Image (cartoon, rainbow, N blue to C red; front, top):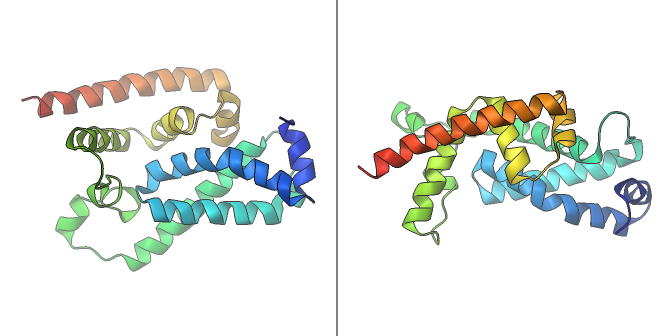
Length: 191
């Protein structure tokens, strides 16, 4: 497998090289965004828009304190925020509905849990989603980027503008907090 730097330099003029980058980063971006949007179709749209913007801006990309992965995640994050702003203007819900709505105006039950999943899996996914919502924005992003998108500490550090060692400590604390929250949900379920 060629190095990422080589692929990026080739991708500026070669569609096949960009396609290889696309194949490598698509699952990571998709996982990162799906946890945030809780909507498969919306996630697909945002990922596609991210890569569309990336291919246009790729000619200006340079390794200057920012890896390609961190750069892509920043584009994806900006697209997600833009989408939430659009949705906020369009979605009008009653106060009762707003209580059941997660980030971005999407109901956790409506958007995240698929029809095919078992009841037990649905409950676990629902609890994990609610638990991630209880973490701070940075803690939630850190857990998602490390364990769902499988990014390195180095890439996450660039994205969050923190040192990798600081992130390791923050991740440890976030995981401990997440574990406590999930245990709280499990104890409610087992009663």
